[in-house]
Image (cartoon, rainbow, N blue to C red):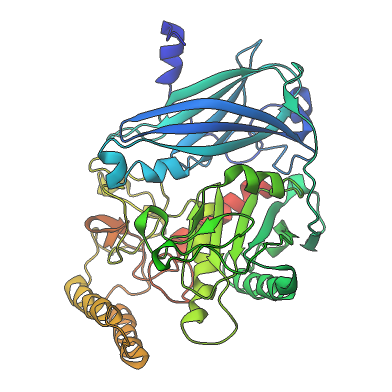
Length: 480
């Protein structure tokens, strides 16, 4: 498509951050109360990306807000924008992240090897033709909320190319929590992968256990009434999911697999169309996939999905599933960044130098005077905030060395972890919001707001005040 001057101006436009509640036009003037799923292919490598429209799918319910139509959260690497074609009015927008957006930071992508991922955008069903746009956040010191358009397509919902057939699956759909209108609630849909028909009772117990974890921690326990929770009891032919590094391959319905991007613990599914078709059986704002495995692992991508291994109710290594479930939901629902920095990941320069992270709990301190969580800090807390990082890092290195040895003693690992936690609590500014170096997979140059948090350590600690505020803000955006 030819890039006209008008289009170029739109590409470089800054998307404003508006007031939180009641954003956008009147819903009924532009939309019907159902969903249009826009499926497309996302292809490229580092520095190059291309999009191709796949299909348009009608889904029977719009679960999102009918009040907050324009995104005001300023989260995500990408932004879907919907314009009324006749008037060029922005009538809907929503930030999100994608598998491609993560993959393009890997060594493979940097080497120029291209890959294709299938993706979907869910928007309210338009009454009239629209311009559908995907924009990407710009990098740079002053990028802030600036996006550039990377894909656009004209969509006429009456053109006869919108699939309206309903997927047919013999899976039970259950509403297990909440009784409110989906448009006024956060609708969380939980799918199981790697559960056979005989293992569905385990799936139900796993869901109950994890929901107790989620709604037992702030801010979710204070906002429990703002959620509806649904399940689809997906049946797989075989128990468990793929583990490529162990030569294990399963016929699991949703295609979840360990070893995503070469990281053993990272679990993703690349079968987006299958996941979306099955998920369309229920209304949802957020997808969560529980995988029937006792191997540590999970993943969470903002406004795509969360994944967590189910583990078991035994205490031991499986106990960390309780931590993973809530941690990954912090990513996918709240747009929170990882605050740890010692564990290995496949990303390279995930947070480019000179660009302030969009995640609400990370900063590179480009302007310490304008620290994004400055209002939560007490007087007298310096920025950066000192802590005994070198001592902590030495303990973390010792733990990693012991954990890598075959037959390592769990008691020894537990003692080191206790020493690490004790060191954090002995710091002068323990319990204070500050700017502590070490976050976002980087030992230096990236800062987190609290010494410990559910996004930092592998523990059952609470979310810090900054993360709690960010999560509560997203809840209100969906539920108001």
